[in-house]
Amino acid sequence: MSSQSFFLVRAPTSAAISRRRLVELVSTWRLPEDEDSRMAMTTVVSELVANAVSHGAGETLGVTVRADLGRSRLLLEVHDNSPVLPQLRCPSPDSESGRGMVLVKQLSLACGAENTARGKRVWAELALPRESAVGLRPSRPAARHGPAVPQRLPPPLPYEVRATDSHERSLRDRLPRV
Image (cartoon, one colour):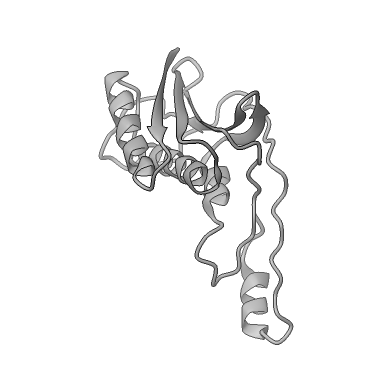
């Protein structure tokens, strides 16, 4: 198992720095990756860090990356000093934010958050492909092998649909429930 942690200043540039650091670690550790897994990894670390920057506390945040090649898994963790745990939300179509944890949940095998002695840890476990194929789109999605850590996020909070907005209501009724 490979593992490394790094610290970032809580700033708007932290998400971009965390993406670059993650890509460097994946390359250094020679982890298998393909176009889909790279997009999932960078999106998830970006969303976790962006949430810690926007909603966390303290001047710095910690990022831990763990790779388990035996299980074809990558675990991403972000630590900050706020005890307030993130919640899944169902933002309205007009909302400009609130989709980060929904993306994390959809792109990961499992995700969750828990309080720590200094604040909280928000994590996501992702599948790694069995063989590397950088730049190639896989013919089928990566298999999800073995049991994943159970999800610990609460169910989504529904948004209110205005009774006078039938178009918005019909769109919501046609979308799959997350």
